[in-house]
Image 1 (cartoon, rainbow, N blue to C red):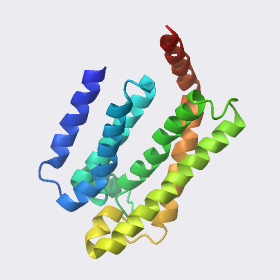
Image 2: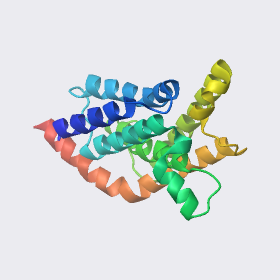
Image 3: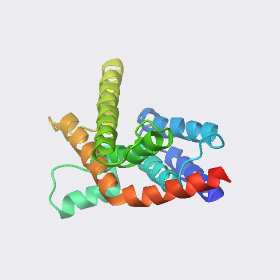
Image 4: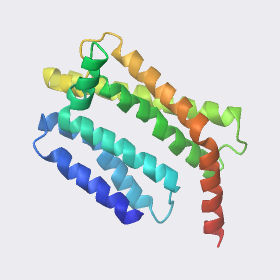
Length: 203
């Protein structure tokens, strides 16, 4: 499992870096994936995560690297979807923001439970998880704004607004939808893996 994860990560990273649309945009988009990789390696022995979470993190990293290669506004599959469904824009960035809530929701949930920050599972746990997800999304929108101010026109591909005036609010909404979806679909699966990990750590 570990070697398969690493193989997929590096294969997609190398592909992503071969003749991307723009190297500056590529770098901006993949930085979170690289930071995540460093954190995973650094904490692998001291705080190993559940297999579910490792898988979600890898999928999120792949989305970032695909977006970095093409830019979020020009991913070919979503250009095709735009034409077929008569959409006004390439919506790959919304997939990215959906997963910006989907994966971090499980990450936040895992840390809160395992560190016993929240001792009871239920409404309050879900509320705190979604608050963290939205805070993360808002911070990322601030980072995009700071990058845009610092680099001017060079950041337009990074922002991926495509002229949509409500892009920031829409991004945060999709992040919230992603977080809610993850909690609804994956909480029981996650609980089973957390229990298996607890038993394994006690041996």
